[in-house]
Amino acid sequence: METTLNTELLAGMLKDKRAGKGLRAVAEEIGGVSAPTLSRIEQGKLPDVDTFIKFVSG
Image 1 (spheres, one colour):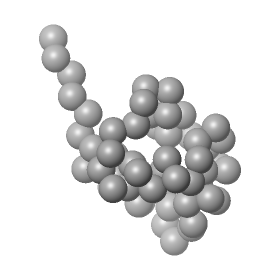
Image 2: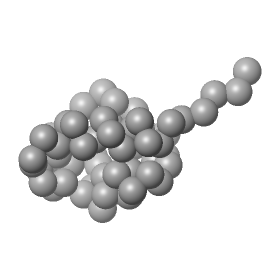
Image 3: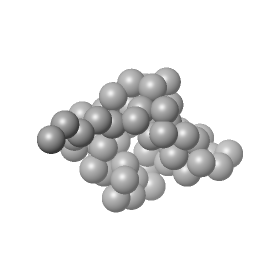
């Protein structure tokens, strides 16, 4: 079974989660994820598994 990650959907989820907050504030809320990493996710880059889990759990 092949599983893919929709990076556009993930970027949209991050933008919704931000809701006007800065990347640093969201990174602090999530914990263990840097603002530059969140920026890359918003640009459609694929995060590593650990970052993905932190993002969807936080």
